[in-house]
Amino acid sequence: MKRLIPLLAALFVLNSCGIYSFSRTSIQPDVNTITINFFEYRALRVNPSLSNDLTEAIRNQFRRMTRLEQVDLDGDMELSGQITGYDVTPAAVTADEVAARNKLTVTVKVQFTDKLHPEENFDKSFTAYSEYDSTNTLDAVESGLCAEIVEKLVEDIFNAAVAQW
Image (tube, rainbow, N blue to C red):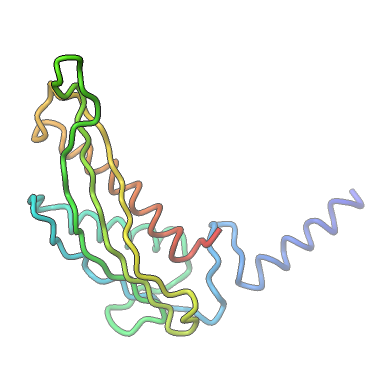
């Protein structure tokens, strides 16, 4: 019991200072708002719903996992980006040189700005993919693949922006 009290006190101090929280974020205490802009679609191959799905998933992740208020303009932090790649490539080839599995890959270029802590700013690309059996058409599996890929991208973007560990 004597060891438990100092441990709990240390956890309370770390959590209350605003730099560490149990939601896996490390947002400075003076940062209160975030602007999450619509992620534009700029890939050659068209997926009409992917921009909206990705943007909403990122907004939902920040709503669920942070204390930040989302504002339309001029947030303390700002997140924007473009979907720059949406490609299908062979992932596994048979002995007859026919694709046994295909891979859908999505690439997103993200710009993150922390106006109060500019050392946290970044401009980088994130890529995620999902494989599917080549006996299926992309149309048949696309929505499930995209949901899986969006989940991976959101986790990576969120971690880069506010989890830094």
